[in-house]
Image 1 (tube, rainbow, N blue to C red):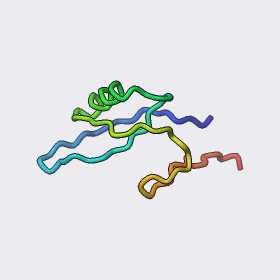
Image 2 (image 1 turned 180 degrees about the horizontal axis):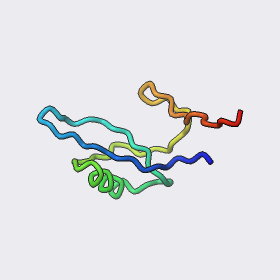
Image 3 (image 1 turned 45 degrees about the vertical axis):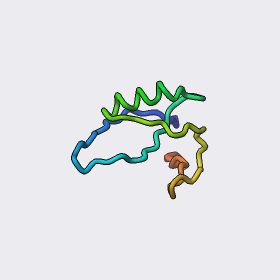
Length: 77
């Protein structure tokens, strides 16, 4: 059964060379609360988070050169 959720380990690397970076996260639900989302991501990453934009997830959208379409894992073909 296809699904869009999983559990993963997040490693946060801290070094003097670490600088601010733009990272895109896919979060569940419609219209997530920006403050709560920022707090959750800050807890996960251990860093300061600024939510710049929240927009709907649309499969097949090209974002920074990456196609967001999920791979077809149907092995019954």
